Image (cartoon, rainbow, N blue to C red; front, side, top):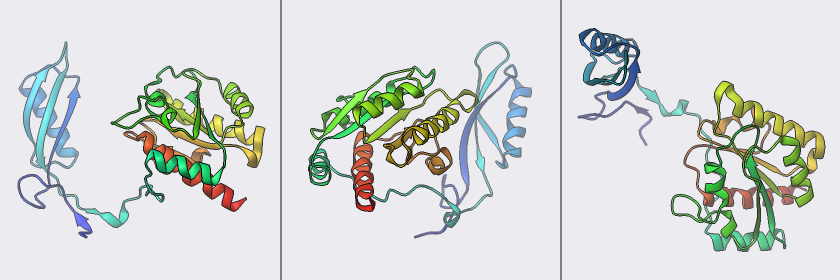
Length: 246
């Protein structure tokens, strides 16, 4: 496998990239010049403005094309590798029956003031996402979807009442890092209320970095594009690991 890589445009390793952005400048030659200068300072040199047009009073949108000199060493790339196999719904159901001998209970919702349920619904609702059925479809999973704007104390109380094996929270609102603050609050509340007996804590949303799970105090963080099958497979893996270490 190649270790050192550069962007590919017309020929291998030519470093060509295309990027787009908006500047608070009226369209015209000066705006195009500002876009070229910005792109060059970003490392695109020489930069060519291949498209620009006004998008309102005093704003211009640009598409810029050109080469970068940067080379990426793949050994420096840090990501969360999936350490568990992707299972079909039938395999998930069979594993839950074998490991727990009862249904796996999942409680989910959007915490804080977040009213965007599209993420949590994509994972939990039977309609699912990306051609995959949501967790409600799995016969051996019992899903409790609390919806939007759930307070952390309410989520803790409901998780305890339902004897949840896992708690899933979705956070789309990220202004002033609200998703990080809310997730830390969630982890602290479950730690205080249930200690080592707390359920698995899983956070997800488009602005989360999966590398931040330990920092946020949760067991797993899923980012943009996560499918229900990935979450279901993780839950089986994590519940089994917990049971083995108990």
